[in-house]
Length: 136
Ligand SMILES: [Zn+2]
Ligand SMILES: [Zn+2]
Image (cartoon, rainbow, N blue to C red; front, side, top):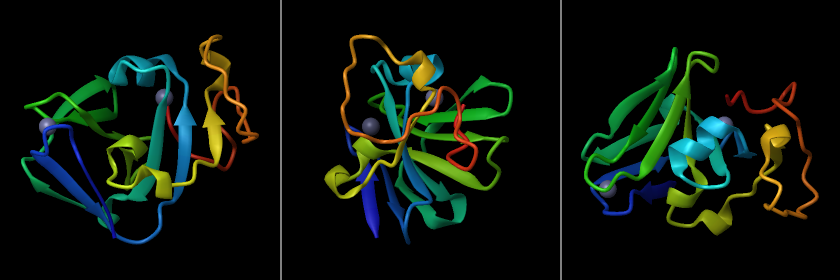
């Protein structure tokens, strides 16, 4: 089981089984939602994830897209989209052991900030990979 929490600890989650994928997203929406130069997501089927503590607040950032956050400390907690039904995307950095997760791909690399230099050798897609994570 993989567990995680927000900065203040009010919102907690536990995910069972293996992630579907782990991906870095460079799109502007994810940057703004996290106030960070990129966001690293861990995809799960929604049925794999259980929340505890306080329920996260939901923000509908665009049609069909729900981003959740802790209403106490503001930590972004999840992403869900009608484009990837039945999935929930958590943030690698909110897991108790993010070092145990293995990112496999960069998406929306066409929007990557020029001063963010990464030499991890992972596949890069200008927008979405054909078979990869359906982030947007
Ligand atoms: Zn919190
Ligand atoms: Zn994104």
